[in-house]
Length: 351
Length: 278
Image (cartoon, each protein chain N blue to C red):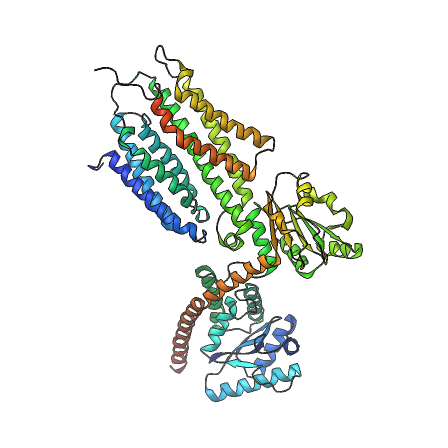
């Protein structure tokens, strides 16, 4: 018996194809039941996320039956998706690559965003679901537990998951370098924009509790305010609330500065002596760069945040080789233990 | 204890503080990206030697070793390092040593000047316990001001990075600027409270006959220092001195203390009485 992986991911297939192979959570156990009933697999876990659909399974180790099982599984999945026969989009891996791949996925090394941690939670959920329906056994239980352990080791011993790699999370990171805590901080969003909204959400997730939205379009301001759980103010009146604002996210389509040096200097007199973080996501910029020289004011534009995110990503990439060495060693260890376990099981059966 | 003298133990401590200072330059250039055990271990070793030196001196003289400039400096360095050794147990604050070590090394090197370690010969008969308490409180207050100086340096470094060197700010381990500002305020108030207590205790010390207290250089200097820090507290209270201004004020005030402490002490007849005629 051996562990195989069959599936497709963002590396091999576009989203239009991946979505056809997606397996909703409720269907996962039924799919595994069908595959086991057909005799193609002995154990199985289905991992289905927005970036991949993978079946981790235990099949017979003899080359003939293993090859038959893989062929049958591929055919089954293609029929289910209605995709017709696929080539390299639908990959399959046997040992030892299958185990290494599982460890890589758990560590976030195969993710679209290198080192992201969400995949580990998704992998754990997929494993627990399969285990609860008794679709896992000695081999997959050990392999998945080891994968979670390897992910923890990689997270502790390397920098693969350190630092923010998106503009929104880089903004939150810089906010945490300025404020003692983001709890209770008041954020103002000027204008509308995907990145601005994401940044506001990211700040809210870290404790910023008051959100004010302002936009030239009152309807858009109100809609966004409702989505973010804040309140809207008319665009020509945002200065009224400025005194209590800690963080400003600006992403308007204005061609000129909406906040220049003299205007901000006058507004600062109304404020307590607390830091003010200005995040200017707009192009052309909404905020005069010279405001950065004012005491207690910290200005970050889109290039600053992107540079921080890119630097963190570069550092993560530098860690890949170290992570892969850990994965290689741990996979070899697991496969060795598995071989000895199977040998003992075989010996016990024969005697 | 070993055959080494207390002064030799102190020299060992200063050497370790110096090595830590050299290493701090390396950490500074790397932008405090890693909390580093090397600085902590060097300073811990120096602290242990410093403690041994003070214990040896204290046991030999039968009193708290704060009775000449050398002992006072050693004690002040010890208080700064004692705080660091405790807070440095938390990895994220270990880099504080990179800021503190040049300061303690400079103090230590200065303290080793031969003229500062006057022998415990014939002295004016001060009331011993009150004098020891006075000296200890004053030196603790200077330790607090020294740490406020360190916090102020960290504040200015962090603010500069956040404004003008954003990548470095993103990767460093310096605390948030708001926390540094609170730290500066707490250390300023603590140091001032200790200084006030220490100066108050001085009134209990029996004064030699014919000595004009307010004609003594050190007493006048101490009042100036007290007023200087009081000024910072009052300006902060009315909102005229915070953030960068407070940091600059704390750095300037402690720099004044550092540069003038020794000279005023030497000129003070109360704190550095002339040797009686043979």
